[in-house]
Image (cartoon, rainbow, N blue to C red):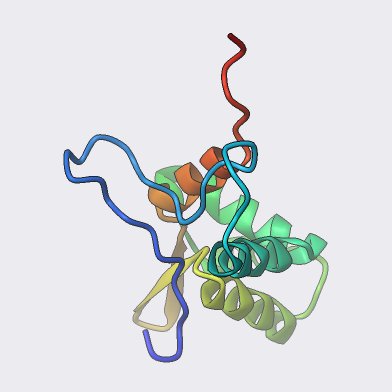
Length: 124
């Protein structure tokens, strides 16, 4: 994946769950690096077309979608490609070319990290 930026997700030593790139917002103040990583992710999802494309991939059967199956979002094909590129650069999608088509996948660890970032602590 040339020129792709990927969110630095860490796998815990016991391999039970995902340690996100950033702490939950209510846990402690973020460091500058954590804030940069989270902002890149949220900025990529801040566009309605990108959010629709991300949702289309994430909800597609098998967790992966051919670009041919998700291009109907009301913009031209070159614009779809641009938005998918931005999602890849933010580390939200990975892709694989198979023949003439490109298949996109949301890694489960990315969804887990996003959910963990926005999780509030349990009430005592």
